[in-house]
Length: 161
Image (spheres, rainbow, N blue to C red):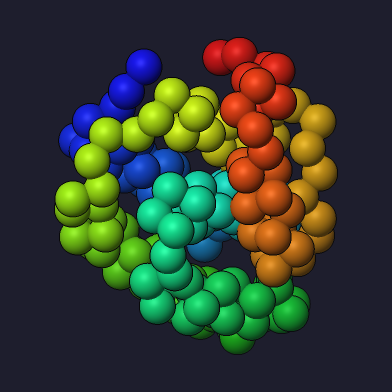
């Protein structure tokens, strides 16, 4: 099983689009629903970023600023104007990151069967399918996602799509 570069870019773009849609919805909500959806957006983003880091074996420089923006938003009251501003910065960072994907993947070539399984596992992980706990903070989620996705492929394949 092998994915060509176009399939990988499409898969990663789909994940980014899902993160972006979720963050956009966070901006529209209030109260506990807003907090819950922000947690979901962070989980989706952590699974996606963990996958990108593993597949590309690189941190392109967008990651730290994105992680810092998410961490800053986590610390704020979700009903405050400061949170709204921080959320806007997170959304902008995610959009910037999305535009970088084709350049990052240029020349990455086909993925191995194990990496294809990781792509599917990252999607499931971001959607909270399975029993992997990622933590509460974005930093914890990202570290746990990277650890989970770096497991040997047979362990990742326990929960087929």
